[in-house]
Image 1 (cartoon, helix red, strand yellow):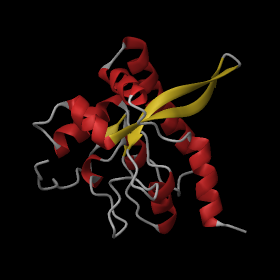
Image 2: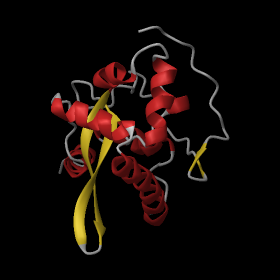
Image 3: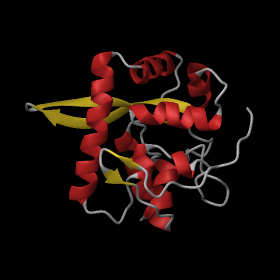
Image 4: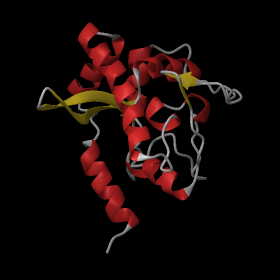
Length: 178
C-alpha cells in the first residue's frame, strides 16, 4: 500500500450539519481500544481514497474493515439492528488505526462514529448524532448502496466484528475490573 502524507485536519469538516469533535483523553481512547466507531456511507470512499487511492474499494475494505452486527434500534415497537461497517481490529481488539502512541493514524478522515463523538457529550447529544448516522446507513441498506454491498462481502468472508454491546461490556470491565 502506498503511503500518503496526512492532510491538515479540516476544522470545518461536518457531517449532517454537525461539527467534528477532537479529543484524545484517556476515556475517549478507551473507545478506540474496545469499540471503534462506525462508518457512514460517505466515510467509505473518503477513508479508502485517503489511504489507498489507486486500490479497488472492495479489496481495500477486505483488509481494513469489518462487518458489525450494528446498533440495536427500535422503530414501531420493534427492535432490530442497523448493520454497520467498522474499522478492522488488531489482535488485541483495538482499532487497527490506533497507533502505539494512542493516536488515530487516520484522524483527518476518521469514521463518523469516531470523529463526531467523544465521552464528554451528553447522552442526548450522542444519541441525536448516532440517530443521524444510523439513518444514513439505513438508507444505504434500503438503496443497495456500495456500503451494504461491502458489508455483505465482509460478512460472507467471515470478517465480522463482535456486537457493540459485547464491546461495551468489555470496555466497562477493563475500565473497572472490580
